[in-house]
Length: 236
Ligand SMILES: [Zn+2]
Image 1 (cartoon, helix red, strand yellow):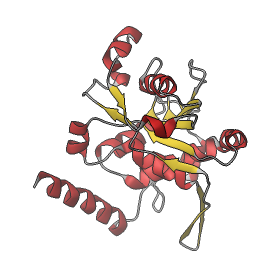
Image 2 (cartoon, helix red, strand yellow):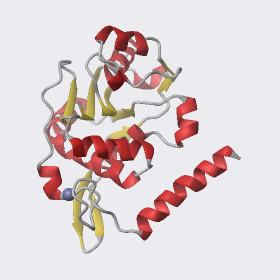
Image 3 (cartoon, protein in one colour):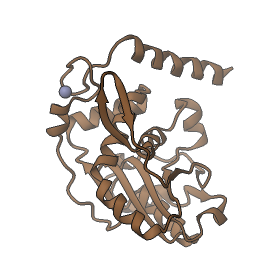
Image 4 (cartoon, helix red, strand yellow):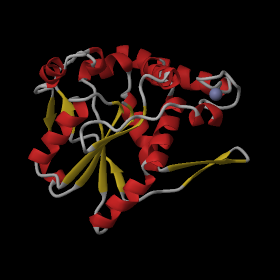
């Protein structure tokens, strides 16, 4: 029953998005969920401290903060798609470079999971929406109302590898690095280990913090046999 209500709620939100054309989350201009002008003015992230984790924008930017908040709490899947496209565009060169090392073997893309309870309440995982759009390799080429997608193979979305075992406090709320590490300790487990052996993996999240979730998942994947793991996040 609860699940049915949730599905109806999410479907209804999607319906609203179709019925009322999008307004830019930054400047309220009609027709785009995040307009070009606002995108161009977004504050870029400084390079995160962890060498294998890369973020595009600075989380202190009010527009990016609002966009992620709306994606997280209002099921704005259009925003999630847009953020996924921006992520892809920002790292297109890195992805091309990674692909040269894969020799045709697929690159796995793993969105940071949320716990079962949280997924039940929210109905979706925001990182998965971003990751799906990222994998689709959106070119963001809109012409005559059609969206042109260029398939970027071999990128494969994997949601059956990393699971979140417990509810944790959002990492961004904890200022102390040790508390963050403690909060996330043993929060994740791995299944289907054999699938990731010698694989190149990209872990995706909406926001990354120093000593945070992505780092923990990277460690877990490497320990379990992955060849190379890097993290991409929309904001830091
Ligand atoms: Zn705008």
